[in-house]
Length: 167
Length: 109
Image (cartoon, rainbow over all chains, first blue to last red; front, side):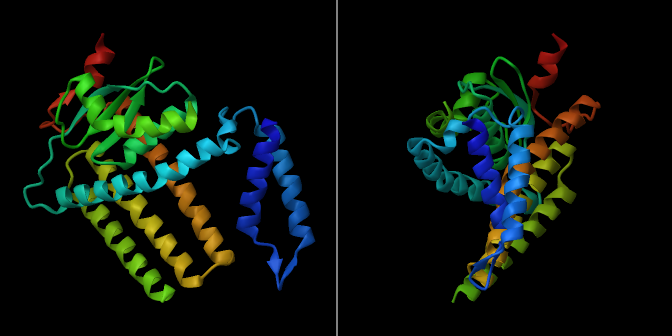
């Protein structure tokens, strides 16, 4: 089941990258090569690919992922204006530091998505994470070094969505 | 019409890339520089690629541009995370005006 999902995913990416639709016909050679390549990838690497493959087939999770995308982009654009402001301001109003936050997410993909979301949003960059669900985050403008308070400010807004997508 | 949207997106993307580079030069230490480079350059490059997709219309180039945007969105923060951790592990200090460093306090215990 898992291999089949990753096979389809790899094949879709192959089709999009090679685009075998020449003059309304499908290029058989490219398609066959794609089937072989996708099969090899899905058989050889299914062990190291993420274990949360059910995300791709559950309509509810896909729906929440689609809802998450615009929310994430909104925060990302906000983050960019924030960093641009700090970079261009003559006095450079930064107050950096590394704080610790706690996440309630359990799955590997969920934590990865959270860490990546944190990195791409306002003034925060994930440095390291521990096995028991703590993340060390470099914050360009430290507002609080308390774990609870920092978690609330940095991670809450994403956790709620990621919980629905991955858990 | 889609051409104009495409060119506007490309322009905004290039502007963000430039601001990211200015931040890269101006910020004091490696962690702050990573902040500027990952955020601005990721958004800038994604906007650039979406702009290219708009200019060329639906087809092979747009599909490739969108795939590249998705992969940049996934890999760029991961790479930043790896660089930050690697810098910390090899002993790069935080800027002297940094206010807190929980990571050092925890690893000493």
